[in-house]
Length: 162
Image 1 (tube, rainbow, N blue to C red):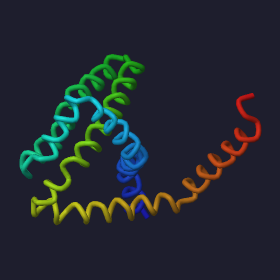
Image 2 (image 1 turned 30 degrees about the vertical axis):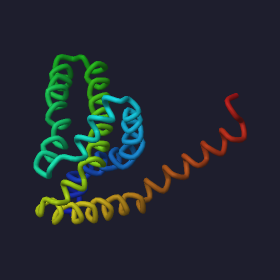
Image 3 (image 1 turned 180 degrees about the vertical axis):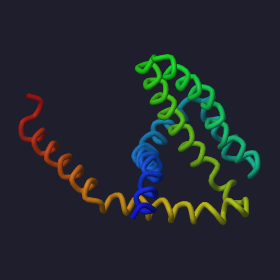
């Protein structure tokens, strides 16, 4: 019982992160893809998509490393009592990071899959993540939240923006 409780507590932040990524990945990637309308951005994307595997891995990891100082700054702000600024900075960094990471993954995945270790572990990661998210979606809390969301949508459709 204790082991199960500890596992649930340890997995909670992972589940929240995965749910955010799941929710935000596609829309934020689509938003970032709109930048390809700009000639310079389109040129940059063509070059990123043509990178060899190890260079693609470095480019894919770049947003995570670039946003680390921003996240550390947010933690510093949190520690100095600037909660609102810290939260805004963390949310902005998470949104920007997810958008860039999703777009870069789309551009670099073919090259990344040429790395034997990546091709070996990526499908396993996907299966684990999908199974975990499916367990969350089957939970009573998730089903309840979906029901509330459906009721709110129905109410808004009937009542409009009164």
